[in-house]
Image 1 (spheres, rainbow, N blue to C red):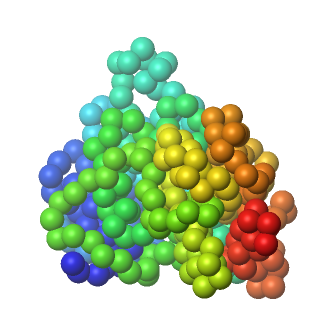
Image 2 (image 1 turned 90 degrees about the horizontal axis):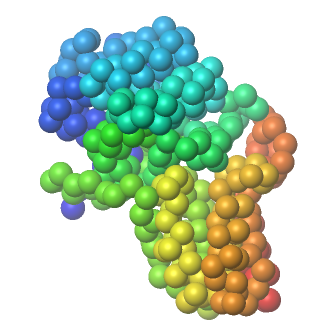
Length: 325
């Protein structure tokens, strides 16, 4: 099987869907002439033209609203935010228009559109460009929220998102666009709302999603050297959440650590913790533990970035604590 970059997997998904369906188009800042801020849309302007790969002004509220209107009229827009930090400018259209329109119209208007772009931190970008909003959008009825961790999942889930009749938030990472992984040549789609057990284990379940999965794998490799076999569950979708896969894993391992790049209050890890204790309390041999970011705005200094973020060392420490080692 061939190996391609994360950005190439996204480009293939977008291009295949645009070839398949003339109603699909891409719109956002620098997606056309500049080939995308992160080169996801490289070459797409040449293939599809400026009616379907559309550069916008720096006006997220405006082009998000245009996308909602286009979706109401039967098109399938893919709206790229250069970063989801900038989506706050457009959040009224995302939350009050896209997410609510099907309900408010009594089912008359579907909103088949995707909002996509990078989320969370990417190194020394400062407090205003380093925020994770997965749990914000996951708290909104009417939206689906996808956070892939590798090129294979990214392609299959983006194709599924574009074909979905609901508005989908598709969240990536600036630090993953160059990551490589195996992706099949033929077409495939992955179901939205289904988690994936990426690594089998018997002693503890580690649940995460997005780029923090890499820290989970690194921690699991080190733990295995000490005889601790961690089962790793990649949520892939944080609305809807596949609770069943998580709970079945916990019933086997009897311990749970949830790792998330987000502030601790009202996070996805909070929700997972609640649902597991509600549905699998009798299977737990230790309290559920969470690893989140520090509860502060992210600083610029690299030493503070390291202290702020979940990492393999922190995961190893917490896993050993729930193992009482």
